Length: 130
Image (cartoon, rainbow, N blue to C red):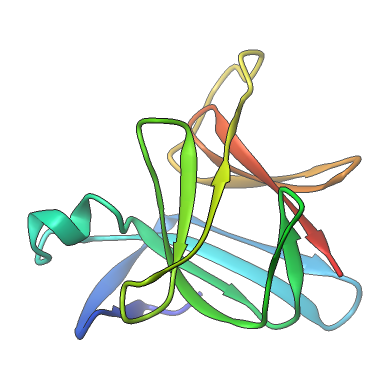
């Protein structure tokens, strides 16, 4: 896990306890982590919660995302936004609520039959390797 992440001209420290990684095959990874955004302006904090890094093309809920490093945020209206490092929206996908999840954490990944689930509390998106 990187100790910090650059986004919109600022660097924020990684919340290691709220970070996760998944491996697809032997050499393909997806890494996500929440960061401390307390030094960011309110409008940036509203859309940016953490970083999302993929070293190969993937799909998120069926939408394609290329190799790269991104910021992400989960909104109150059931969406996850993926942002480039300048803060421009690259992708927006609907989340699914897992009402059966007993102990939600701020961020976690689990293996599922249809890919990897990235959870924010009880809300999740599904990541699939291409």
